[in-house]
Length: 285
Image (cartoon, rainbow, N blue to C red; front, side, top):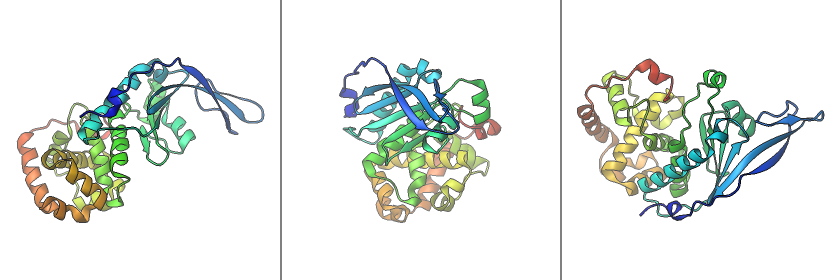
């Protein structure tokens, strides 16, 4: 059964300017921003609501020009992620904001990345730009829509995971996108295995965000994809909520034994992956 989002009509609302006032000594950082002598800045954005989501785009730039395709990409990704996790109804209101740069996101929410999902404030943020200077300076990648919307769907289904399950949180989101420069998560993991670049599970469980990001995310993505496809949503949800120490009880096998079996299958499926390591390290573009 598909996510309830699919049953909502696409409500075409006339775009209307939303004036935002913020106190900033440095002046406005967004499109169409101007600052008076006292430091008050006027910034204009555009909004569109397709229940339960409200989309915010800046008043100019690529996100504004591509606003309707971006909305379609978001709603499509949410529908697919709902199906992956067997979510019949997604009704939690979220704001989905598009930013022209990581710096603009940093100024707004104090985090400057390509995409973020805020479970507590019910908000997603995505950077969308084709400005060559910004793309070069900030190493911009395509907006990680499938990744961030999977965070949203999974956390609303199972709650925020314990610290030792951050690998599954990020891995599941990476598996939802399942593409980095033309390679899926199992192909990337096969390359990591065959070049002795895979990480020990202890590192993923206890030091996930200290690991090499490209390696950790895709290795975890391969594990999440394998567990979901071979053992189903219910066991994955139990692991997410209970923590890594419950793995053997939930799956009836140790993680080490599961990994040995999985590694053999992945290497057999993808024995030769001509992945360009230097390009891979630069991000999924």
